[in-house]
Image: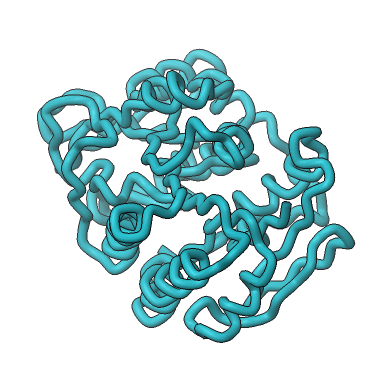
Length: 324
């Protein structure tokens, strides 16, 4: 078996590689990675240089490949997002469907295809819920990827599945999600607070308790990178994953009120309430639990504990994997 991976140098890829190489199920498999801007140097990985938008490079990379894991993504950089999310996806699928060796295509999708906190859903978001991208090219490309994969299954009968993940956390990411000083991701505090107030809250080490459009505490979906990696390993070469879409997220969404309560109790941090126009949603992972036998191991308590106990070594700088 030969696995072709895109995005191997990113957050998920760098966590996936050591787990894949030490999992008995994949002993004897070979690994090839398509790399463009960042290159991985590992004896177990064959590198193919080139852009996913380059048809010839993608077809060359597919030579002899049995399985594809497509994780490469670009945030709010329109030209690159189209190259990876549209041209790249099309090139990969075309090379896959015309290959004599290809057996399974696995896509890592995102809950931006269902708008995560930007759109209201009156019930838990399942794999049957309507796709509703929020503004921006990244969410649009994630919808296009899901639809393109679905249509290739319909048009050509290929074996392909999508693992739809929410915001992916590792190391001290979650601590920085809640930070007023060195924030990771959104929402941008300046949309709700004056700069002087942000500085004051940062100095106090305050924790934001976000409220949704109804005034209730905001509930948003997350997943720890280790749980996403475990879902990928389960889906690869698994007949139960054939031609399907799976939500993979924590069992229940993160409740910002519970976060505030836990951090106030465990670290004595002050709490500030911030009203927002966002919607609380629940990404239902029942299908992945039932069909794949997947279980997320990191709940809210562990997510907080891991983020606050993580100590960075001098050779472990904090990285922002993509803009936006």
